[in-house]
Structure formats: C-alpha cells, structure tokens
Amino acid sequence: MEKKHIRTSMIKNIKELSKLDRDKRSKQIIDQLMELDVWKNADIVATTMPMEHEINTNYLIQSCLMLNKTVVVPKCNHKTREMQFFKIKSFSDLQVGYFGIQEPIEDRCEKISKENIDLIVVPGVAYTIKGDRLGYGGGFYDRYLENYNGDLVSLAYEIQIVETIPTETHDCSIPIIITETKTIKTSPDNN
Image 1 (spheres, rainbow, N blue to C red):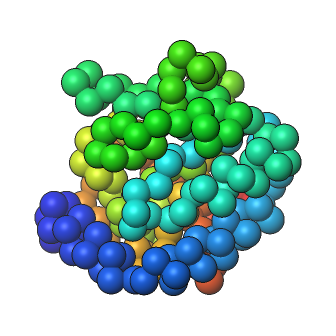
Image 2: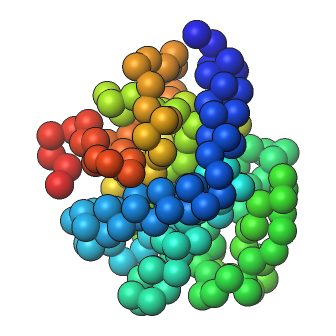
C-alpha cells in the first residue's frame, strides 16, 4: 500500500474518534509515558503542538511545566523544510502558525539545540511494532533526527499500529511506541 493512501486512510479513521474519546486516550497514553525511565530521566522534552486529530500533547506539556521539566516545541520553516525547537514557559508563549498549529513566538522563546534535548516525542500517522514510522510526508523529523543521540518515543492510538509501512533509507525508526493499552519497545535496550 502506498504511503499517501495509508496517510489518508489513517487520518480518516482517527478523525472518526470523538474528541472526548481522543482526549481520554491521550491522557492514558501520556500517563504511560510518565512511567518510563526515558521520561523520568529527561530534563528537556521536545513535543509537538497537536493537530485536532492527534494525541493531545497539551497534557504532556502541562506535566512538563508542573514537574519543572523544560519543554520545547517546534517551529517549522516550510520553505526550507527545516525545524527548530524553542523553550516555552506557558501556553501564552504560542501563536497560531502554519496549518493552524500552535508554534512558539520566536522573540519570546529561547532556541534549544538538538544536542541539549533529552527526549523527543516524534509524531506520526502510522507505526509498526518493529518501529517503522509513517510521518506526514514533509520529512521534517527525518531530517532533524539525523545525528540525534537522545531518546525517541512516539505516542499513538492503538488504531495507528499497522502490520507494514513502506520505508525508505532516510526514514527514522522509533524505539518506543506508546498506545492506550501497551508500550511497544522495538529495541531491547529501552526501559
């Protein structure tokens, strides 16, 4: 099956979940993340601002802020297809950006280099239990994660786990995928 078809089909399936159901599942998934050592050991956590159908990472951001973890969110340059992360201290450090997604207000937020980020929560449309990931097609994360040495995790609804995804050599693999019901560790050294 082609990547484009999988993306379209999966996003349609996710959008069929009610907002209440998505929020409930998001909380379950984020609670599971907070039980893992990769979360407990991270001082600087990178996550996305959610689109309507995605895992509601606002819960994750609130947890970071309450626990005095540094939280960074991306600002994407769609012309260069590059992404940078900025530290936010509250939701007031955000404004509506490209595609209606909240992004940091650059002149109010400190830019954080990837060498300083301990844990990156990588978004995606679909995943396999082997750690294959299908993103949204822009390649932002695949490019950003080149030479990144910190921890990676993805948060996904159970329905986003599929048998196979067409992959290419530049596609990044995800070592830990967390759903409502389980934590999938695709690499034996993750705990």
